[in-house]
Every structure is written in structure tokens, then in C-alpha cells.
Length: 205
Ligand SMILES: [Fe+2]
Image (cartoon, rainbow, N blue to C red; front, side):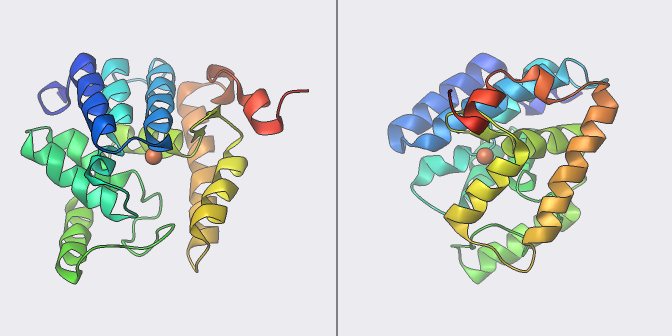
């Protein structure tokens, strides 16, 4: 059902590699980890296709190809992938940051024009999220550029880099609740599917 609107994995790999030539940075390794986690979790998630999940993970931050930006990477990514005809992948560029579905509930700030923000707000309000949106939100909160870690470590990492605001606790609650929801769906620990969690969380002995 999603296939026409999500690139095949080799195409997603190519798009990310091209983006890296425009703006290399830790976001690329992070994206590859998100993709691998999404594929591993999707294998146990009824109705989700692991290849589609992998491609969506690779591309969720593709808006960073436009340069070093803050939240506008969501708008840039949506526009870029929608322009290529990948409507579902474009949707994920926007929804992956909104475990709390409020355009103001972000880490960091919107570095875009008021018109662009109003457009993003309309898009988010009109969007229906499915399992893929939830899966990429989850994986985004489990992957540092260096690999997987305890979710709480990633949440604090984001807070230290982008600061906190009145939505931070609500967002953290949303992510922790999402982790429990997904573990219920897949019938196992998410962490059991992710290599290197102990090393990345606690450091090597
Ligand atoms: Fe991300």
C-alpha cells in the first residue's frame, strides 16, 4: 500500500549519500542507525514492511541536505521528498518530531518564516499518523550518531543541545509511553533488538 510513495531501500541509500555530499555531519550516521532500528523493529510489527521502515528511517532527516538548520529541516525534508513523489516519506519528515502533536512542541526552535510555519502547522493538523510515523518517532529517540542507547540518555542529549521548554516533560512522557506501546505491539523488548545499547549508554568498561 505504501510502496509507491516510499523509495526502495537502494534509492533511499542513494538519496542519503547525495545529501551527505551537501551537508555532512553526525545526522547522517544517526539516520543510518534510525533506519537499521526501524527495520529490526518492523520485522516484529504486524502490517509494517521492514524495507519501507528502513527507507523511512534513512530519509527522516533528509531536510538537513539543505544545510545546518534547526527545525526547518522538517519543512525542507517534506518539500524535497514530496517533490520527488514520495508522499509517505515526506510525511515522516514532518511527523517524526511530533510525539506531541503540536507544532510548538519541539526541541529547539523554528528557523523559518511565519508563512512556512503556518504551512507546517496546517500539514501536521491534516496528517493522519500510522505505525510508520510512530516507529520513526521511537527510533529517532533511541539513536545517537554513535549508536543506540537508553532512551532517557538520548532525551537528555537532545535537551543539552537544544535546551528545554514548557513542552519538554510532556514530550518525554510521550516518548516513554511510545516505547511501552511499541513493546506491547512487537511482544518483546525494543532494546533486545538493538546492538550496542550497553556500550553506548554506559561506555566501555
Ligand atoms: Fe532524527
